[in-house]
Image (cartoon, rainbow, N blue to C red; front, side):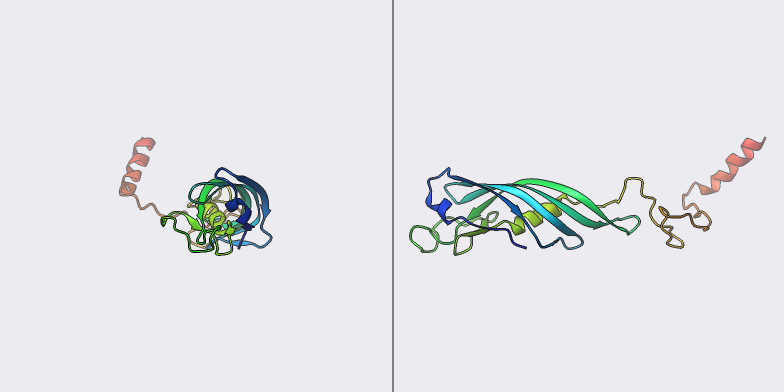
Length: 178
């Protein structure tokens, strides 16, 4: 799950230096309860005073499970984000970096490799709906027999109403017949 770039030459350039690349992940990306495939995109690296700012645009096809009918379905997703990467080794001296620590920035590897894989994974994961649905009109499963109501109707009786006003329904029927 890595999308790696050697940024040693960018780290040697002047602040404001820019490099742009396209990327493609050949292996599937594990998103815990989902899988992303065909991850492609572009990245623009900009050298800052503290490290490298990566501006990323990515596209992925995500295999999800519908929350209503429990059937797998595929959804396309586009993400755009920026992340900061800080070096752990000073490029000029080869000694550990003297930059102040950051809780939000990713780290470059000791050999100046920048890996976008985890940042892309996190952003795609954040883009997934909390309750993924195969279609907005998904009818889900019958609560009694478990039949997928998108495929066929079941013969189960309608569920009894649990409303506290269910007892009043009979009163309306009496009024309408008079």
